[in-house]
Length: 332
Image 1 (spheres, rainbow, N blue to C red):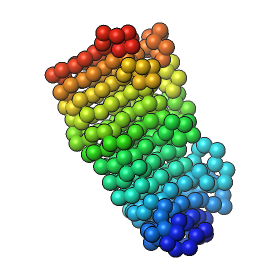
Image 2 (tube, one colour):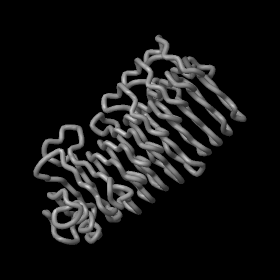
Image 3 (cartoon, one colour):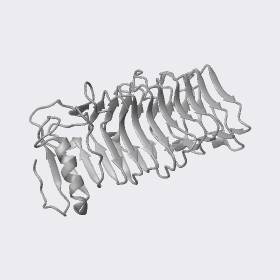
Image 4 (cartoon, one colour):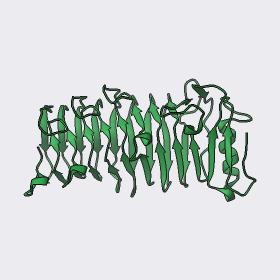
């Protein structure tokens, strides 16, 4: 384990071993970072001897309790696909990371085969998860009472979140500032075929402040691409039910599903337009209110070629606005 600064100052802890515990391991790095709270923020980097590298976790890692960046992109040879995998098979590690009470960044890692959520952010302001492949877990990325950026505006920030049993991304509680953007959720790495999650993005009845978009491809879900069971949420600027080019269907059962809350779907500009196509049902509004404006529903990304949904928009909400009086508010 190499530490580039003394205690009580910002430090870089370098992972040099794929063992579960001991010198040079990820477990030791998190433990040392937590012990140096006064020096935070810290960085955990990777310098493993060979790749692809597998860290098989026998027991849960320590909670991340100080501001830390855990950066798999520092591994030699990284060019966009994670070279370091954390795996929960066979042990008692039900999750990869649990971040609590601090700002943390997790980048460039593959997180797989955890029987609970792969990553949990709890009361974690200003956190980020980017450039990760999160797959074959019970749940993917869980955000509780936090502001978290899942993905980012650059292609290099994109998370691939696929083949999780439950939700790929789940948000609960006050999540003001949480942005889920630029990810492939429920597809393969090329965005050309389904790699289904149970639900793409889900919010519970307590969720406020989360924003889904722009730039996500949310497709292939066994149930819903984006689901709220009672919150106020915005879905804007995404491809929902298509491939990454917006030219062919990768269906969800339901594209956008609002249960008991208030859904804002789309907006008044090309940047906020969703393409919601190829699904069994494009949009289902069953909550208190819904506003669906400025989207392409049942077309390709140009709005000129058909990629039909079975049903475009189903409304059972008490109040709904579908389209508007201005040209840029119309749904195609």
